[in-house]
Image 1 (cartoon, rainbow, N blue to C red):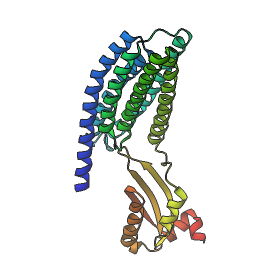
Image 2: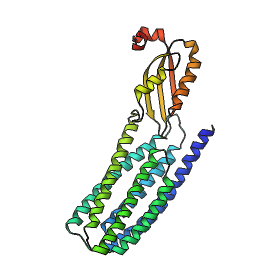
Image 3: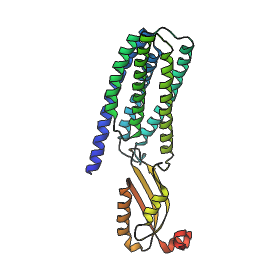
Image 4: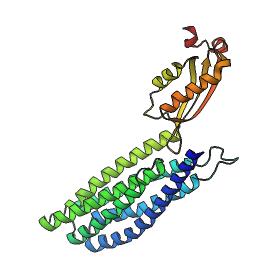
Amino acid sequence: MSGHHHHRHDEHAHHHHLNMALALTALFAIVEFAGGWISNSLALLADAVHMSSDVVALGIAAFAGRLAMRPADHSMTYGYGRARVLAAQANGVALWFLSGWIVWEAFGRLLEPPEVEGWIVITVGFVGLLVNLIILKWLHGARDINTRAAYWHVIGDALGSVAAIVSGIVIIFTAWMPIDPILSFLVATILAWGGWNLLSETTAELMEAAPSNVDMLMLEKQMCDVQGVSATHHIHIWKLPGGGLALSAHIIVEQLDQWDQTLAELQQALQEIGLEHITLQPESGHESCHHHCCEACEH
């Protein structure tokens, strides 16, 4: 019960941080748009658009986080935790669209580089970097993919601010205007990579794929090494919305009357490797052999 209470406390803390990040991002996006418009800097405007997309991304994340905290009911027996995964996937797609927009604008400005006010770019970019670092600190350490998706958006913002600062410095000292769209290409590439990672992870989670860091053969061996276990089958392992792992399996046991002890040892072994929710169904070795002719029984 105390672990559940601590988990709920963490959820509320992260939700509060998302709300604060949303308010601060919305405020600075307005400032950055003004700075980019006055200075005529694509790097700054691109970062301002990204900040605006972050307002949407953080808003989606905050809404999904609140929805996910709703308890399970008769119509949603698993609860609403998958709302976080859906929100993260939406934010992954948004990163791709954002990356495409930056590349499109950068190509146009690379062909005809406009005059850029370097000092305004540096000033606004530096303030933007400080804002992003504060938000990154608020969001750091979140386990759920929803907050991590928002975290990726803010990382992109921070990189955009760094690009704007570097662009402003180069323009002041060399007057080389193409640096502005060139650095925007770099930011777009990083955002596209982040979006791909989010889409890959969320798709795998929605498909309930086995987590990539789990060796299924080793897992089965560990279960079979428990005294009283003859074999296993129908093993399913998947990631929970909160980041934990769940497992269900059928266990062929030598003696059904010893199941309580075998179950306790299996649960301990599985919990030691990071599994949180474990559902195991015992089966008689004799009956399993009769019905399935399993390889373990043949040996």
